[in-house]
Image (cartoon, rainbow, N blue to C red):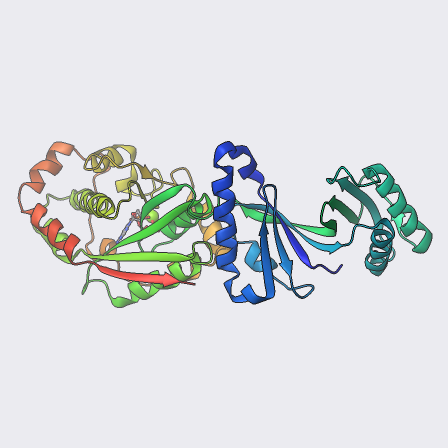
Length: 386
Ligand code: ATP
Ligand code: MG
């Protein structure tokens, strides 16, 4: 059926009590942002229980955009008409006739309590109008068409189509986090899961030119371009990691290179985050996936920071991760061949249970503090925007 307004429901937000207002404001801002190119063709009306998008022209197709906006539980494509009862009956008939041969159920809600007919009256009147004038049949349990009518103080909203949104919390409403982004499959999926929960991400990448080529950065930008469907503006910080990496391979005992490298990444990421006033880190680690992701390894690596490290994929297996990566279209980008700092410096026997004392001893063998400071002060910043 035709529609001239989109009704947006918050779902999860309703349970957030006093934060609700802030969440709705953020959701509205996010909707405005995602629909910016249509701004002259619609009007966004924010109320305490719903957000309405009033369309200047009927049937504008915004469904695919709205489906990706976090914090939106569901939305309905509705036809708003004058709430005069004859008008409602005629509109229902006009719209629903098009669906000849199907079964239906009417579900009216009288939200404006001053309306002269109660919900049951409206249900009955609409149903009999349709039964009299069409070959449609009623099926109250499993109708083909659920015809909803909401009577509000500014009119009647009639709709048959309700679409599930992505859910979660509105963009950025939970706080900020610094995501460690490699070119692999896991970190983009971890990013998506976090953004969807309302966390605003900035991204840090450790680059090791000339061992890694600029193809990696293109790859990251392509991935972030996809993620910008879910977070409108994205900061990517590229940290030069070559010298540190070379130094690690210079001084490390066999088997400890990866542990030390990850400790350096965590150190740099924490310090960098702090300078940007961000107080948590995230990555694509999954328990047991590789030697550096055993619980013993995580313990020793994690000791260099007191930041919370969010690992959205901690319990995911690779098959599940790949499934999501394919759904959000990052998979094909992630599997493009490239050299990353982990493949370029092969480690024959990475320790699955490294000792902290050994790490500290190795880290005494070079002036890593200066190297870290140097890396922190010579980063490159890119902004990815939809
Ligand atoms: P992914 O885990 O994303 O598939 P990967 O398998 O190459 O990539 P791992 O070695 O499993 O990466 O590293 C675990 C996590 O550490 C990654 O998910 C990512 O968050 C982070 N990480 C690894 N390499 C880098 C890097 N060069 N720059 C930033 N973060 C990185
Ligand atoms: Mg991985």
